[in-house]
Length: 206
Image 1 (cartoon, rainbow, N blue to C red):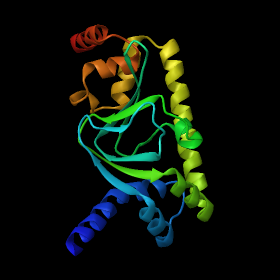
Image 2 (cartoon, rainbow, N blue to C red; image 1 turned 90 degrees about the vertical axis):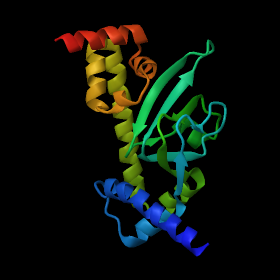
Image 3 (cartoon, rainbow, N blue to C red; image 1 turned 135 degrees about the horizontal axis):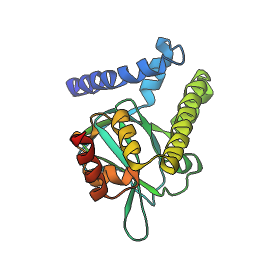
């Protein structure tokens, strides 16, 4: 029992190292800050194709990816999946509207590979921000960056040709093509898998 607890503690420390490094780029953390944040994070291993969020349920956690890759998508009435985001190591994800308003989410999030995440419960997050106001700045920066990325993607989808959108994608996610099915990449780009194949062949021929 003692060994199991120690291994869990060691695993959590390893998972949070990357997160603390990222946070320290925006705010200064002392040992008390780190200890409290670590105490409220829930480490979780997610198997490939396992869901971490399901449409119709309230999002209870803000999710930090430590390794692997998650995919967030919306399923329309014709059962077509529309990929909204790929989240790799170092990314935060989760339905913010559902998370903050406690309303059912319209998105599902699943692991495309065996992945590791740190879950931050909504109640614990509110307590964190009350006790340690410096984290308000960190999450404000995270949300601002997310909004900027979202706006940039909208502009790209409206103005850039599909080939340019694909090139931007592989620059942003240089390793995803190795394990993400083509249909998911095509969905993210707003094109058909067949058209994506044509773009790939064209670029290979250049």
